[in-house]
Amino acid sequence: MPYLDLNPDTRLYYEIDRWSDPWTTPESVVLIHGFTESTEAWRAWVPHLGRRFSVIRYDQPGFGRSSPVTNSTVFTTEGFVDAAARMITDLGGGCAHVVGAKSGGLVAIELARLRPELVKTLTLASVPLAPPQPAQWLAHMEAHGVRSWAKETMPPRLGSRMPPEGIEWWVDLMGGTAIETARAYMRWVSGIDVGATLHTVKCPALVLTTTTPRRAYSRSDVDIYRERLPQAGIVALPGDGYHVGASDPDECARITREFMERHAAHHAA
Image 1 (cartoon, rainbow, N blue to C red):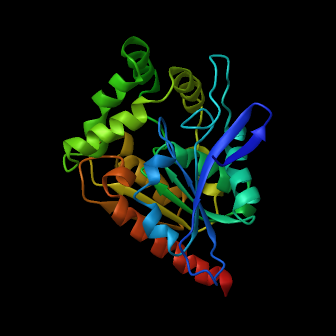
Image 2: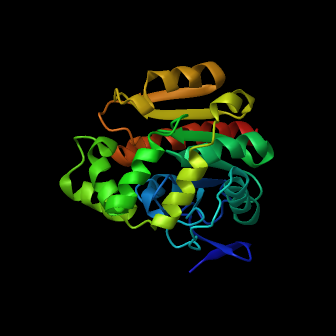
């Protein structure tokens, strides 16, 4: 299995997919998954992006097949940003398009702010500026397990168009996260506030969301994006789920690819 050693205690699992013409040198795109997810969360996106880009997806520290954590682990924004940066510097040619889903987008925003030389474009798929109910979510996990939490919260996450088999697949994926990882991640995400510094992100940006009235991904977040990230294009797909990257992966990937292609051509010029 391919791993990148972040430090002596942390190995990051990653996958690279590239189906571009063999005589070309494609730009890279790095995909950053959200809470209780892994590289598998992007599987439907990869065929759309891989024909044009070198697609790098990885398991964030503590998730998927990356090194596990313990109850004493302290996640930091700097640590998550460093993991993403290493994917770009070591595997992505030193500069890449970056896509973040859900709270993975918080890492993507901070990467674009703190390491702007690494980020060509920034795409944010259902990224809440104030992550919802971390204390309540963790309390449910502690009492009933991560899989129970995933099952209870999945229908509003994926919306009414997702078939039962799709919901079960996502429950299995997210429910497999270790409780130690969930604890450390919730401690981190409870203290992060990207809204206050969002205006310092200067690269081309795309915000993907849905028309759901759910508060955590509500009009108020979209208004903040419009105000503090004025260069961003905002696309709201029709739907009553809030995880647009999972409920509408084909459309999201198509829109994202077109956005990155426009700026790839501009960058090359």
